[in-house]
Length: 427
Image 1 (cartoon, rainbow, N blue to C red):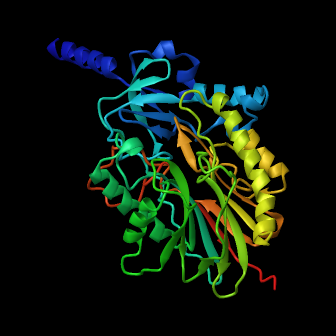
Image 2 (cartoon, rainbow, N blue to C red):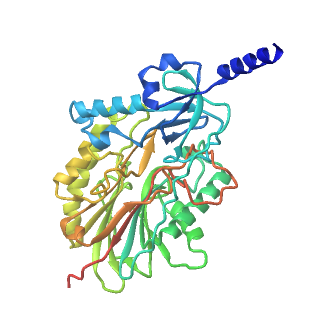
Image 3 (cartoon, rainbow, N blue to C red):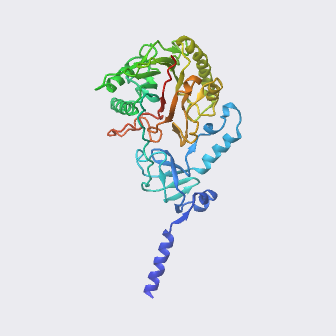
C-alpha cells in the first residue's frame, strides 16, 4: 500500500513539473493557453537583438521594412505594413540572465526552455546557451588592388567637453581609440572614409598618433575648419599607396552649415600609376529614435539634393569622372534619397546579390544604412564590395564596454563597408 501511494505521489509530482514541447507556431496560435507554463520550444530561434536584460528572438533574421518596401514617407505601402506586422508577430522577447556582451545578433538558440509570461513574452531565471555564428573573416586585398573603406566610427572626439562630455569618460575614450586602431589595421585599407569624427584637427591627429605607431605612413584629409564640437568626416590614407591631389570640395558653400564637413569630395591619386579618382564622403541627417522617417526624411532629401548638385561640380573641378560615394546615409534601400541617387546615374554596389545582408541593426531589425555608389566609369573598376560584420552583431550601449575587452569588435554601431578597386589606367 505504501509503495502504491509513493508511486502515485511520484507520478503526480512529475506531471506537475512536466515541460511541454511546443513549436513557435503553436505558441503564436494561442499564447493564452500556455501562459504561466514552462515550455520547451522546438523551433530554432535566431537572436535578432541583444539588450541589457533580454533577447529578441525570431525564426530568422528580421529586416527593417524600409529595406524591403517603399517607406511611409514615400507613399503608403501595403508591403511595408505587411513586413512590419510579420516582424512583430514572429518575434518573442526572452528575459534572461545572459551578460549582454556574451550574446551576438545572429546566434542560434535550440531547445529553449522558458516560462510563458504573456503574449510574445518569455522568462528564464538562468542564462541560455547559444550557438555563436562564426566571426566574419576579412581576406587581404589582392595585388594591384586598392582597398577603400567607408566606416562610421561613432562620435570620435578628442575633446570630452560639450557634446562628448556626457557620453564618454577618458578611460572609455582610450578604449575606443584602441578598438578603432585595431579595426583599421585589420582592414588593410589604403583609404578610410570616416564618418562621425570631431570637426577640426585634434581628433584625426589623436587617432593617427595611435595608428602610426611603428609605421608612420598614414595621413589625414578633412575640410579646413577650426576645432569645434560638431561631427564631421575625415579621410585617413596610406601615403605609400595614394596621395591627395587637390583641396576637398564641399556640398555646401556656407561653412556655418552643419553639413559643410559632413558631405564633401576629395580627389586621390595612386602613387605608382598616377591614376586619379574621387571619393565623396557623405553623412546624411540621422533618424530620431522612435520617430523613424517622418520628421527627418525631408532633411535627408535636402542633403541628397545638395549632393547631386556637388557631384557634377566635382567632375568638372577635379577633371575626372571616376567617383565613389561612401558614408552613412541613414537611409535603408527603398527610401527616397537612395532611389534619387540611383536615378541620377550612380550605381548602388552593395545590395546587388546580397539582399539578406546588412550594415546596421536597430531594435532587432537589420538593413543597410551605410552605402556604396559609383559613377559608371568607376563601377567597372570595382572588384568586390561587402560589409564586414565586426560591429552591428555585438551588443552596445555607450559606456557599457567591458573595460578589459581587448578586441576590435563593436568599436562603433555600424559595420564598415569594404570596397576593393582595381584602377584602369586611362592614360
